[in-house]
Figure 1 (cartoon, rainbow, N blue to C red):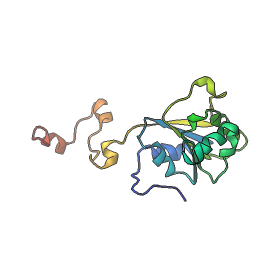
Figure 2: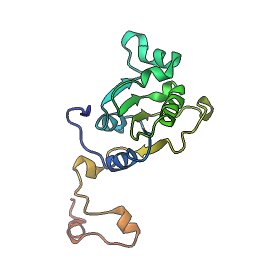
Figure 3: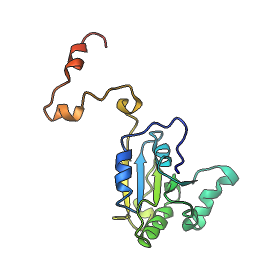
Figure 4: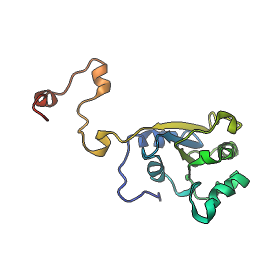
Length: 170
């Protein structure tokens, strides 16, 4: 079971999420606002807590401030969206990862980074950071993916059908 939203389009970063989920206790999906972090993480989650849910006067954020471990309960993988609003959540996740050998139990998403001093441990070997970018033209289906910038910079060339269409207003 996952919490995939209707209309979700798979992302290239999901290969990394799948691989890292077998290696680390938690994953932190980081990137710009509106690049798809939450929707992508929901595609891999079995439960979610939204820290900035305005219901009941931001009850989730207040519960996390009072006791960060209280929001960790739920089916795994558990998504904690906008965790950086309560930086102590990072320490609670890291501590929980220390107590088990299970992998891929938490997904953390957030656009803003808290100050480094706001949590006590960097999470090394427990929480993997994954950088997510905006949706590419290939991911949205607006490009075939035949041309590769990586290949071009490595000395490759453009596929013939792309070269032939250059300069024709295509």
